[in-house]
Length: 382
Image (cartoon, rainbow, N blue to C red; front, side, top):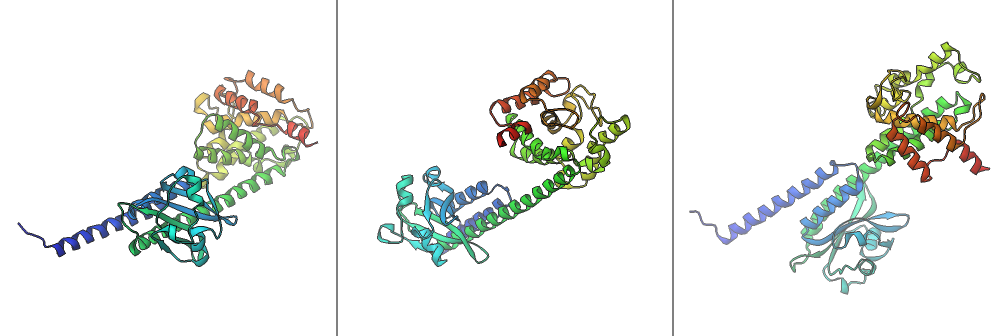
């Protein structure tokens, strides 16, 4: 049996610790790519920070509107700490922001830079603290802190090094989230521009797509759809009439009843819209709602005469929203119905033209005041 001397044991122990630390740092990089939800990623990263620095708590503070906000925390009283705000130059975090340097304080009671505001408001007791700047390129956007070394130990320079590595991961996550948000905002702005371009062809439908988006989102929330489904149906609703770009303007703007030929031209727009957008990967989940929003629950709709639950859910939702807006909007050939008249008509058609569950969700949302028709909006605006 091979015996190890004390020096060899210390080296092996030190190597094992370094390997463990490296694995945790690699885990932090893995976390960045695990989700686009910034709150989730930062919470997980702070869990790693608390573990790797052997601290009682770890947190991220970001500069927002001239003050420091705790946006993620792990350990301690994390729910309470998130309600705390510090002035831009307040406390250890403020010092780090101003000096752009890490800091290690073994006894906060003896350091004038420490602010007890967070402890007073959260009920946590800080004894020692390390903090490092959170940077994107050369801009300091916040601070990562670890508080109270466990097991009666003291923070050291290695803890600063490890926390700095995690701070870099946190900065990457924040930058990724900002880029995604900006890209998503640009994407939605483009979608709205497309919808507005279609509506410009028909002066009587101005604002229609935005209203259908609003109504559809209410129905979807009442039905308990996920956040991703809400994003997809928002796009589907905004673009549900995009195929009208292929319908002659004379048909779209005609003030009287359409001829049979003209009606057939109008009925092409769901298929035209879905075919126009089918090559865009980001719209994959939205396209079924665009193609099938004119289907009927009894199978007598178009373009594919789908019936019942064979009709995609987004399309069933949009069908209710679209009909309500059409009935409560003035047209050259008829006056708008009141909200209650329109709702009564929709309820009568549940199970025939519309999915009853979508109708129930719509009515529930309306009763809560989450839905306001064009007619009601105009009345309120006067």
